[in-house]
Amino acid sequence: MAGKLSPSVMCADLLNLSSEIEKLDKLGVEYLHIDFMDNKFVPNITFDTNMVKSMKKPMKNIRRDIHIMAFEPQQFFDKMEIGSGDLVSIHLEACEDAHAVLKDISDRGADACLAISPDTPVESVVEYLDEVCAVLLMTVYPGFAGQPMAPGSMERLAELRKIIDNSGKDVLIEVDGHVSWDHCGEMRSRGADIFVAGSSSVYGKEYELNEAVKKFYSLVE
Image 1 (cartoon, rainbow, N blue to C red):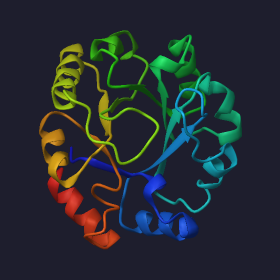
Image 2 (cartoon, rainbow, N blue to C red):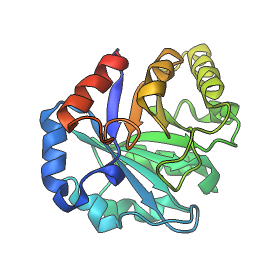
Image 3 (spheres, rainbow, N blue to C red):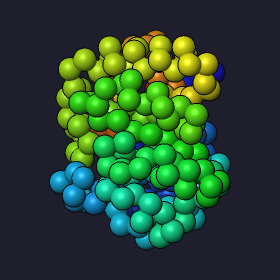
Image 4 (spheres, rainbow, N blue to C red):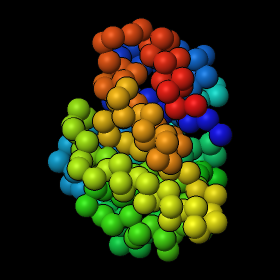
């Protein structure tokens, strides 16, 4: 299976968001990565729930990849209209009962994903592998774009891939954080399946969007 792309909407042209989504859709991009923050779990705010909901409208084939960086994430599900076709990540560190939250996502028809921050041991995902479609491995600390990669991230990725493969579960790995031109190929070789691409690659200044998307796919085949 070839690598899948999830451009970060936080790095997109927000003044022309609808046309930006349509453009990505036409380019065959699988996901649109939408960061939602509560200014509590992380000290930042991006889009409100209405904005997350409204991004559904211009989508045809592309799917929402909603990354919820918030305590008690289930309180936002109704307002975001979480449902079929969505990939929804919640942070293990932000949930009192992650099992219940993941079940809520799945019960709504969405694909449940468990996110872990750089300081969280990768083996902590083991008890959740029956309940998720993917694990989101943060290679930077959640909350801000443009950070350098956290030390040891590549080793953590390889370790997570080994854990999942040894479990026999069909679980994808998504990587988020400094997914650059220099790093994405190695990330792929170490086991990543879905790539959150932002200012260090797809939304950099070197290429037009269509050229950048084509180049990215060539590096994560």
